[in-house]
Structure formats: C-alpha cells, structure tokens
Image 1 (tube, rainbow over the protein chains, first blue to last red):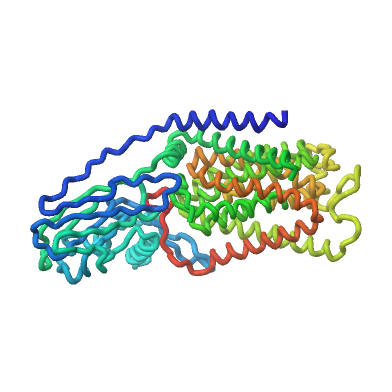
Image 2 (image 1 turned 30 degrees about the horizontal axis):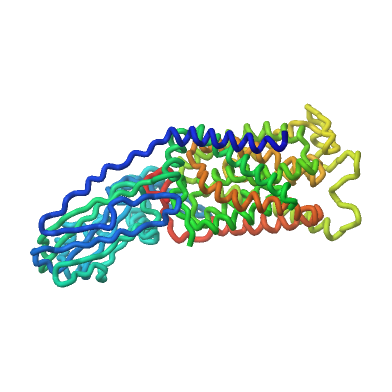
Length: 271
Length: 315
C-alpha cells in the first residue's frame, strides 16, 4: 500500500493537470502590423515575442530605408498603451516605514523606449518633442493622480513620478538612447534594435518612426509588436485565473506526489 | 545564465538560484523538522518575487518537502497520529481564516508590512527563548538528554500542568502523556493563520510548543509536526489558489527539485545531532532572519513608491 500511494498520486496529478490544461486554449493574436508610410520602408526580425518557460527578455532588430525624404535624422519610439495603475507610497510611522498613501495613476505606459540617431535636443525643437511625445517629461505631463487612501503630503505627484521612473528605468522598461544606436548609412539605410526586458508584459506594443530634417518632421510610420505567453506558461497562467479550484488541487497533488516519489527514490537507493 | 519564466509571478529568474535556495531550505527542513518557509519566503522576496506569490508558492513547495520528511519520520515511528489529527483540525480552520486575512490586507495595501512585522515578533520570541533554553541545556549537559524521557514515563513540563485542568483530556500513548485537546487545536489554529499570512509551515512555533508546552519528546514532536505541516500547507495552497490566485506552480516545482532532495539529507543529519544542538542551531538561524526583516522595516527604503497588489504594471 505504501509503495502504491505515490504512484496513485502521480496518476491523479497527471489526470488532473491534463484536464486543467485541456480547458485552456490559447488564441493566436491577430497580427495587424500597420503598413509603413510610402516615404519609409522598415523591416523587423520578428513581430511576435513568445513568453515561454525560457523567456528572459528578447531583442527585435529593425532595418529600413528612408527613401527620398532627405531626412537627416531618425527617431524610433516604442510604447505600450497607457494604463491605470495603483501605487502605494511609504511614509514613516514611528520607527517603521509602511504604506501610508495609495494613489490611482492614469496614463502610465507599461513600456517607453526611444532610439534616436542623434541627441534629441540636437534634432528636435522643444515644441516638436512635445508634439511627438518624446522624453520622460511628456509622460509626466499626461499622468493624472487620484488619491485613494491617506492624505496627500503636498509633493506626492513628484514623489510618485520619480519613484515610478526609478522602477521603470531599473527594470529597463523605460529607456532613452539617443547616442547613435540608430545609424543612418549612405544617407538612406538604417538599422537598430529594441531590447524587450523580462518584465515587458504581454500585450501590443507600438513602434513609431519619425523622420526629421532640419528639426522638422518630414515623415512617419509605425509597426506593431505583440508579446504573448505561450506553451506551459500560458496554460498555467490561464488555469490559475480561470480554473483556480482545479489548479489548486493539481498544485497540491503534484507537490505530494513529487515529495513521496522522491522519498521512495531515496529509500530504494539506500541513502 | 539559465533563466526560467514564472507564470504567476510574471518574471524571469535564474533557475540555479531557485534550486540552490530550495536545496538549502530543504536540508534545514529535514534537519529541524520545520517546513523552511520562514526562511524561504523572505529569501524569495529578496530576489524580487512579490510577497503574496512568495508566501503562497512556498506553502505549495512545503507540501512536497515536508511530505518527504514526514514519510521519513513515519518510517522511523516518530509520528503521533492522534495528536497530529487534533492539531490538523485547528490548522485547517486557521488556514482558511488566514487566507481571507491575506486578501483583506492586500486590498488595504499593507500586507508586506504586516507580514514582516509578524515575522519579527514571532521569530524574535521563538528564536530568543529557544536560544536561551538550548544554551542552558548545553551548559549543564549531562549523560541524559534534558528533554527526552525514558520509555513509559509520562512527561509533565511546567506549562502543560495548566492544560491538565482543561476539559477534553486525552491519552497520547505515542508521546507518553495525557493532556487536553484544546491547546493542540488552538496552536494548530494559530499556525494555520500564520501559514497563510507568512507562507510558513509553522514548525518554528509548533515544535517548541509541542516540546515545552504540551510536553512531547523532541523527536516525536518533529515527526508529528511534519505530518500536520503537510496537511495544513495543502489546505493553504488550495485556499490561496482559489482566493488570491497567487500560487506559482512553476516556482514551487523549481523549489521542490532542490528541497525534496535536501530534506532527505536533513532527516539523516538529524540523527547525528542531539536535541539541544538542533535547537540552538535553529534558534541562531531564526534570530538572523528576524534581524534582517527588522532592518527592512526601519531602514529608509531605496524607493518609497511601489505598485499595489492586483494593479496593472506591478512586478
């Protein structure tokens, strides 16, 4: 009986997990990459990033030609749709640090990266940068804060913005590289790449290209990149969200089965 | 670098780092008769795993690491089933209450603070008293174990005499004692709440309570504790999956690989150490973790801003 218990548990785990996974069907996202503007032709190494068990961030290479625009600079901006997030702000209570305020912040892009062929201040005017929403300050201007718990300490908006920037920059979700990663060759061909860090969430990402000549916009185009969970990662995430009871039972049975099977293995191997 | 992506935590992490932490904690689990969650949860948080996911997933891996250790002790005849079932009844009740407490605290935004504060109080109290007691026992070390009793002798530690006056008195022949079922149920309930709140098995509370309050022999306390840990952690895992959706089976399975192997070596290592030696080693580890968590609560944080649980963009 003792020997058959782990085997029975292993069978139960398999049946349970199969049932749970069978209930989770992954829908392939529709790839609707927008055709580029006639003045700019771009290509990317791929348009879909798959988040599987071995995912640790990814890189997409882009290349293209400026055609006959006469542009002398190129800016590429990668953004995700703006979202609303809940933010906790810590304060000192006696000797301890704890969350004392909670805010809802609107219009925060999950990811925001810029690549430029030259420093933004050299190829754009402040007005153009604002119009194209280039730079972290444009994110700051869009953010709207609503306090949910606690009392505003007066400078909470700035504290939240700086704190958010720190989190996003450290996780490489926000980055501005205008030191020449985009290289324009022979006056018309270019190539560069975007790094998608491991924290980049599944969803649709927009890549916008701005062709600049004498600090003026002379053309633009865009591409769409998709990040989606696939395979076991997608199954587990969906099962946990949509079939939590079955998922929980599976988690327990797998743990019990694994523990007992290994126990038997050690006994049989004479350790 | 060999990374794996955790589906519920939504993050990529070094595979060998998780395996190594699991193996180390698994070894301690087998050695001390504790689930190891009190070390694992803070370690997981230190490498960036969200506290709620760390606690829930640790409960899941504790089921496996303790199942292996519990079976080892069962084979050696160290499990008092009658005592274990009474504690388990309390543990299941407490675990269910605790999971809903976690849900409430996450909504309030201070789950992490409460979690660390409870850790500091619990680990400080248990680790401190265990350290003092073990040091005293080692100093006046004699030929006989200060805790283990001879065959057939009924244990009567000071605190247990209070429970002799409570109703529901029962005989526990395996542990050579007669006591009320009320305290074992109560301590099981408390550990169940802590299992949900902290992601711990509760051995660091249960083992001292069984030895010093109930009066069980050290080795029977460890074996019985592992039995209740398996069942209580299984209940908490299920409840967390249903209520909070925070059980990351990918993380738990990776931890299992290290911990189940480590636990087997721990069980064997425990046979080469005396009761007070095991307890003083455990108390030092407990106090070190308590100190680390206390510093987290009082030192100025690098960033006062963080994403709230359940909100978009949080990692």
